[in-house]
Amino acid sequence: MKNTPSITRLLDIMKQLRDPDNGCPWDLEQDFSSISQHTIEEAYEVADAIARNNMDDLRDELGDLLFQSVFHAQLASELGAFDFDDVVNAICDKMIRRHPHIFASSTIDSAKAQTHAWEKYKSQEREEKGEHGTMAGIATTLPPVLRALKLQQRAAGVGFDWPDLEPVFSKLQEEIKELQHGIEARKGSEYINEELGDILFVCINLCRKLDVNPDAALELTNQKFIQRFRYIEEALESKGKTVEQSSLHEMDALWDEAKGKLK
Image 1 (cartoon, rainbow, N blue to C red):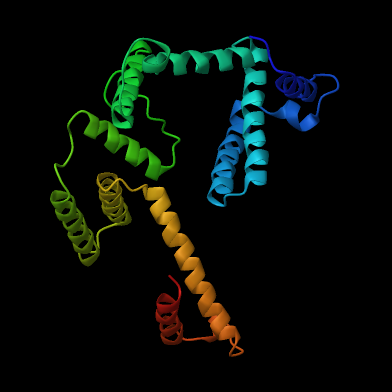
Image 2 (image 1 turned 90 degrees about the vertical axis):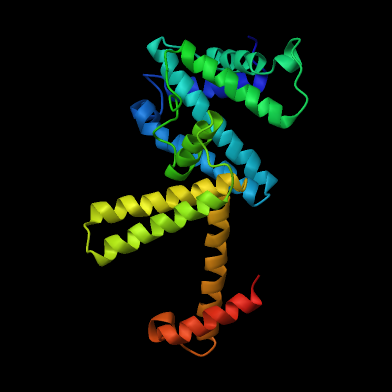
């Protein structure tokens, strides 16, 4: 593979940073584990730039994320495992393999059909790697909400799914009652944690059935909460008060006021 000048420049910078004699002390101390969290953080920053529709920030954050890929590839190259070219060729081969309707003679006429075919190709690849079972290959390091969604999608893909929304709501009510019972019976924290987890899991299932991204839905509520709480703080400040100096009754009244004014 022939690298473009810009990629070559980045790869050369990475090699200089890791040069044993003249490299950067911080970069030289890093390994896969120590930079993995940075990789995750950069991915979130890309998502944040997209959410804010800030193209300048998106350009910069994509560069940061690309650098993380280059960093990992450099570490692997030093171990003789693979290099950046291998990374690029592997994803090229994968994209071609998973899009035979574009690069071969297969025919797929809808996004839904492509999604089904994509999962089929992924399943075949897992089998080839010796990963058996419906839940194989789902990363344990995924954020819990995303991991729960992927587990449910896998199960649904083999027919283990509720036929419609009604039993989902029934299951949610059942789990809420179990939590209430546990609280009333003064069950331990382990029981309470488990029941709360069950409720969250069902809520994510409800999102999936309604084709709603649970992360996006929760973040929408986060932003709504921030806006309404800011309204409370500003309203109290105009009266010369802080939230700490105000009663719950007063703040609750302002919350209801915010709900009516802020949509």
